[in-house]
Length: 470
Image (cartoon, rainbow, N blue to C red; front, side, top):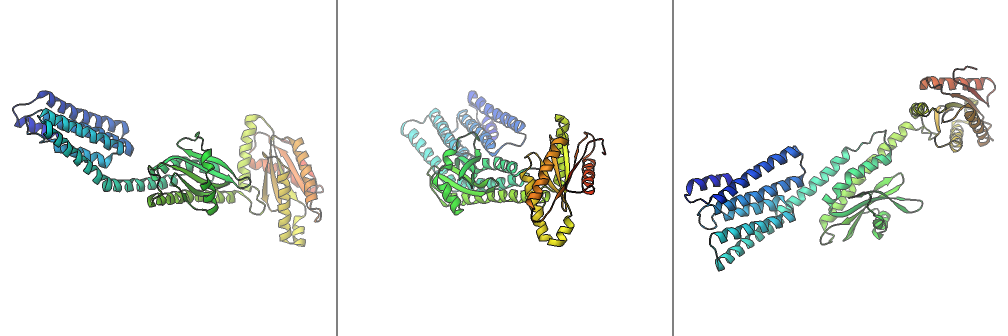
């Protein structure tokens, strides 16, 4: 519109104030250059807020251009001035409250300047300002009640959709722990919370069941922010006890699922100007709780499948898949640290005859008892796995044959003690890694040692050193 008016002004009027006309041209050129630079810098990936700021600047330049065009000629007073209201309406639609206040004052100042330059004085000048100020106020009121409400609802829906979309991209693969998955969930999701329910601070805690203690998991806008005061709110305990959303004038508490460490709860310090608990806020809180609960449940389900696929269901020990992965990892560690690595195969003696005599239910109980005994008598860095049937495998990092033999003797005695009434004994074969062979060969050599233990009398430990068969 501004270039067309500029051309019409130049062709239709003999008396032209070239300074104002040059100002209009400058406004056009600057707005075009600004938009070109903005598009080049953002490459089409600007945020909604950045785009709104860009159009706000262009709207200000357009209003200045319109004012310069009207002042550059001897047109009747206020011929182009109503066009100023177009900029006010535009910013009321795309801008925030700050932009609206600035554009209102800016447009009114330009209108006052035009009226003064064109000779309006006294009552006429004052009436003109009152009329335009009232018109601008009515425009803002209408936009706030109609377009503003619609825009707010659209922004709310977009933010909620974006939150759910970001959760769809959270990695739930088997290679990640639940803690890492939850860290990603909250890192991605918390920045969307203020767009759905206006907030000053957001914090997520897990409550440990044993000591009723709240531990910070994540927070917004900064993880280093002290949010301990939020965990002490009475509404937190109420929300967890009733398993429901608690909405208060200044705070909102949402139960958002469970973590391995305990219940998860989100606390939002609200930023609502009036502090009201209206229906929109209640709906937003409910949708937030549902979105986070859904993704934390998915994470727990995926982790459960992951655990099931890597764990023996009878004993709870690592299964053969986990065993092979752990051996490869410990081999890499042994090479880097130049440390010993030992492997043991353990078998329950005459277990088939035991099952035939006492039944599989008792046999399963013995397997679980022996598994628990081995777990309680090994180090955290050791891996105890069920290799199959009544056979177990131990991975012993940073352990040589002497240390491994001592541990296995201790386990053998412990196994006898834990099954005293049933008379079950253990045989074990032990070997150390030679730094070259693959995991299969490593296991096979330990299995040969176990075979020797069983063929030489059972209830004993036999070791085979690397590069040796004796």
